[in-house]
Amino acid sequence: MAKAICQVDRNACPRDELVALRNAHEVLVEVDPEFDDGILRIIRTFDPAGLRVEGELDAARHAVFAEELTKASGDRGPVHLDLSRLGFIDLGGLNLLAHHATELPRRTPWCSTTCRPTSRS
Image (tube, rainbow, N blue to C red):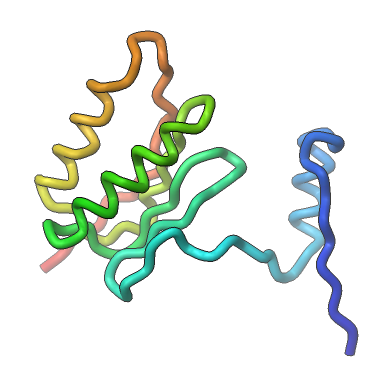
C-alpha cells in the first residue's frame, strides 16, 4: 500500500482543473481547527477564504468565535462563513455576526453564508 499527498498551487491551475483534481482524490486533507472543544469547531477555509463553523455556538463560546471572526476578517478580501454544519446558534451569536457586519468598512462586500436550517429540540 502506498500513500501520497498531492500538493497543488491553486494560483497556477485554472479553476476547472482544480475541481477535477479534487474530484479525483478519495481523501482530502484539511488544516487543523482554529478551535475545537468538542462542542464548537472552527476551521479556517481557503477556497473560499473564511471559516467553517460546526457544532453549537452558545454564550460560553462567543469570545472565541468573535476572536476567530476578527482574525479571518483581518485578511484581505471578504470572509465566507460556512454555517451548514452549525446545529445551534443562540441570539448572542447572531448578534455577534450582525455587529461584525456593521463594523466592516462601507465598501467591503459580504460573501454569502452557506447555511442549512436545522431544528433543535
